[in-house]
Length: 409
Image (cartoon, rainbow, N blue to C red):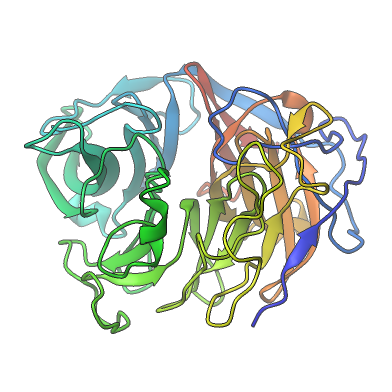
């Protein structure tokens, strides 16, 4: 079993774009700013001032960023928009969402993740997650995965097709999960949230339901070859016991899937997400019930359930600490393989919504040996984190008028 790194304090980094650590928000829906709980082992070196370039502003509720082979960028808007940005971010065109139906933008729902097929140059395919209403009952919804062919000349999508649906659909407006990641075999990982409501969360432990799971599918939506075999499991199941995983990335060396997920009040996690593993929600958690000091579930550990490689927790169990919430609300996850700066190489970057920062986790294998909180003084919710083809990090900030940011000169 992995030994988790518990972040228990803060180090003040008064280096221009760094700020002191405060609290965060478990689901990232509150507008109050936050920071982190915690400290890792001594962290040297720190980055110092970070150059941030605002490539574009006024983005309508941006959720995800993906790069085409020519370095142009696709950006989804949660309220139902898809934009194609020039490689420098200075201009954009709207893409017609031809074929999209059943989209609901209630609560945390909407048009969410977007990824580009590794064979895009020949098949022109891109893939989306979105929150889809039930065709027979508009009160029910769930995460869906669709693919389409992008015609960049006509600025439209062709042959839109839903290839996977989280089942069953339920009456909820939250916790859609929704990150997509291609593995090295060309198959898709899909993260699925527990659907938030107290009557739905326990189903994260039910292998026969789509709540709180990661699935691995082919680009046609079928269960991918090599998936684990678990009795009674839904087709495609990879792992279970998740709450609301909104960050996902492949490790650049091992090819393993890493995910980040929202805890409740405290208990945000980063996990190495392995086949057939149970990540514990809601039986174990490092968080408390909202508005109380009551521990979620049975405790923080249980035989047969995985421990996170890193987590954020309240120090004193209170719902508020220093006027700010007490977890970071992670969304967007990326490994950095560039060399500018050199000490960032092989670091894991975690965007924080309520925590309003960009976290760098320094790794030794699967062990977090240090952490650094960046961009805290910008007071912006970080929705997505990607490494661009130029080797620099790109960020999307959350909100009705979001920004596309580039880190580095």
